[in-house]
Image (cartoon, rainbow, N blue to C red):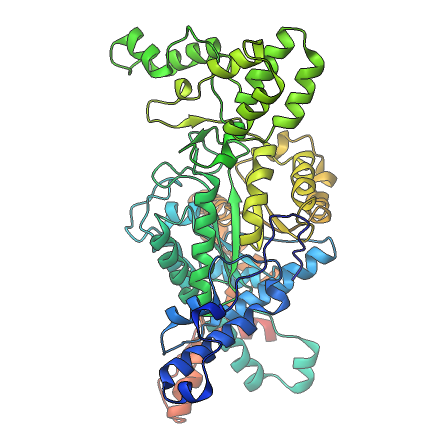
Length: 573
């Protein structure tokens, strides 16, 4: 595996524990206990699997025995495992070469089949699924409030389409093409690995595990989880995002990995952080998050909620305006920032610079300890320490406010790296400088960490300052930084809307001329297989199945009378 750790945080994978008494059991005792012998053999198999290079640097907070104990005696195999190995091999190879592959969110079987000719991976978007194929049939924005089987069901549909067209192609090549023709025309790989959107996991640990299992059973090669809070989750390019504590998201990643270990799959686990733009945090319980929690040192200023209630009597109505008013007065800063600001205002610039450097990523207790060590009691810095309050700035729902940005993403990524194959920083704009800063921050500690990038259609790409050549080179430039997998999340949705809107308008004005000129002739000109849609849909494959059972069948779909023969006649003419 690529992931090499230079951090003291790195741990070796947890293996079989001799303290549990299994390793030392005698052969005679095992012979008398075949159930235990079978269990121990399974545990050894898991250990041997984890010893592969694929897992170098991956941290598991459980043993091979724990996994074997949860696997049961019936151990099915999953096609998704082969897809996962394929995806990992592709991405790790690209990462080594500082290159990238790019894809987009497939909306339906037509898209997933047609894109296979050109793109080696497929993305499945929760946004697209929420808007077009919720299993409740109720469309809506990307709030992850759709039933949790929605995206796995979409993966299942797309993967079955991939398998079907793979079978159709092989049957056609063997039955209709000579060896020379097959050599001259290599087959299309209709099985690009699918990496899908698991949102926040749709709940707690058990929900994450159940959802991961659904994805594996559906055929997904990988899944990504974001560090937002279920129930308040938003599309990464919306406002109002609330992060969960870092260690809670680490728990999600571990739960997903455990489920894949139980299933025996190499499923790629992708960790996404929304900390670049999210300004709210569910809890301050994780000391690792406290360095960027914001508060105020204004002792005379009441809490935000008290301020709003005193002004309106209800805390509602003018809430947004009152919040802005309070924030303008609060001069929000981190605990470390409050101390540094007080030192600077007292003209202790040298002390302020040193304190800022040494306290930047400390938890609140660490900042307090450093202040007590360096600053005398009653000094401006100590007074600021005592006055500062994060609770005053909490929202009416109780969320803490945080300092968003690339640095927050880096710190979270460093926590996620031992548990994730690929890491994704959701961004507010396509910015190479931010991407470089993030990649360098992660790779300073984990130089082998693969990264991915959302080439989002939520960005107005025409306002980025890039010219056409810059746009063309953007994916390659990101690849040089380690972003080996990139994707336009919603391109399937947008191209579907554009094609439909364009044709509907033309059809309304020109009738059948619009269809023939704009679609049928273009399909013929460009060699798009849907021109002969009966063939595309697999009618010949079904005929082959029927003929296998009854070679003299008179009900073959592609037999006499099929109108698709008209296309062959035109080609011959």
